[in-house]
Amino acid sequence: MRIRIVDAFTDRPFAGNPAGVLILESGPFPDAGRLQQIAAEVNLSETAFAHPLPPGGDADWALRWFTPTTEVDMCGHATLATAHVLHTTGTASGTVRFSTRCGILRATTHPDGTLTLDFPTAPLTPVTAPPGLAKALGADPVSVHDTGSHVGDLLIELADEAAVRALSPDFAGLVAHSRRGVIATAAAADPSRGYDFVSRGFFPGVGIDEDPVTGSAHTALAPFWSARLGREDLTGLQASARSGLVRTSLRGDRTLLTGSAVTVIDGELLAAL
Image 1: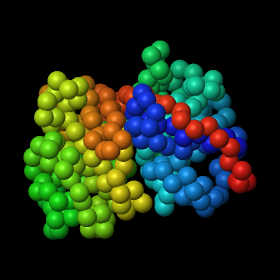
Image 2: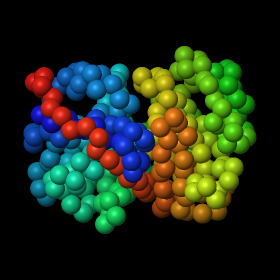
Image 3: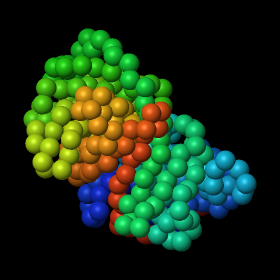
């Protein structure tokens, strides 16, 4: 079985967020324990598994995502990576519909090679910063929002871009403060550089200390910054060491996430499923 490593939300290799992608044959998924073993072996923030569904239904493919330690409800970059593989191999064209734990997700390819994901917009609820959060994060929040059940993060606004870039969290201390992790964000210091806001994502509770580029987080960042900046279409920079850009378009209860992807490794999984 072929396994590919795809860098998502970037147009060049060795940037953005790498995801493992395995396209399976039709039929039910293998045992979840086996999928988790493969994801642990791949040891990237997410490994995606997809298999085709019978024609005539609400979705074309079934899709699941695993971190090295657990299955998750939603993942943007591994969905982008999976759609990229389907399109670049000629397995699919146009818009692909995925059946997932968070509902039907769509991925559309464009003539320039970029892809747009159609995801549910995360509901934002203002909350009081939990005791110890500022110490664990290493910065004082300006505001804190819960992002709902599918994303499961705390969205933390910081004073400025420099504060986001300077973060060096206590990862063990962050685990107690959200279901999945923490998204730190601030407005861009200089929007002329090509992005409107900056973010970083820390998810030690699911085995990822810092995620390079988190698509699902942008379903919360999009409504947050659209409300503040007064525009539905924005560009976010996730300022990890690898870095990546996510173009967001807020459409009410749906958020469109657009980016590029590059396949960097195409190999063979020798262990039987």
